[in-house]
Amino acid sequence: HHLFEDCHKQWYQRRVRGFSFEEVSLSKKEEEMMKRVLCVLLVVFFSAGLCDEPTPDIKTFLQEYKGPKGDDLKKIEAIVEESVHKFVENVSGFPITCLKIAKSFSDDAVIEVPAGYNVINNRGERFLFRACEAFFLENFEQVHTYIDGDVIVNGYQAAFKRTILFLVKDSRCRFVNHGYTTLTFDKNYKIRQVKDFTDVNDYLVNLKKCSFPGTFPYEESTKAKDEL
Image 1: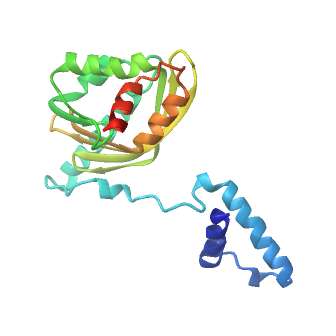
Image 2: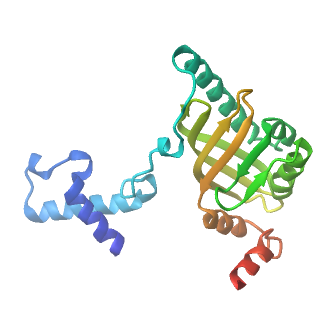
Image 3: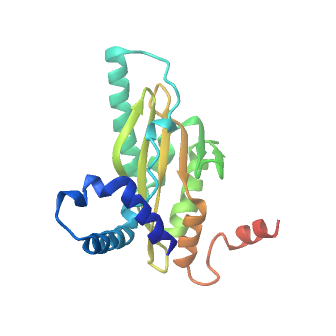
């Protein structure tokens, strides 16, 4: 009910992509009914963002760039964008190739997945390889990562909106997770920092729904956290 009222208010503010009933001849009753029908459609397609909050500007995830300009900058940004697409390809597959992922990071890399929730400091390729296998191969049969829209590049930094499709191991249940990822590269185009911004609770809820009873990998950790 409240969602309908909010949508109805947005109708008067936004006129649904600029359309106005003044352009056609309708009675007051017909106009009101048409508004209600269209608002119901907006609610149905709520997930498409027609009645949702505006998405954040991806550029706000990047820091100010200080470095080469002109043609040198264009060359750097072209290689960075190519490196982003290679990384996204590596974080997809059946199964995930953890060795490729481990080799894409610098020795001093800091990985925040999700950002502000889980911070990993690189302790070598073997360490990252094992961490990758513990997360991907133990929990999922397949993972597919997609870039939604353009990759925003600023010097050695890049940011993009992404969607990840998970196929949970054993149950073969699928769910998707949406978020924003930033990558910072060093001068050798190795990843120095990853920050992935997503709704952790949404991820955990969906993973639990797709897990058999007693097999949810975060059962004990979330229970301990709740007790605290």
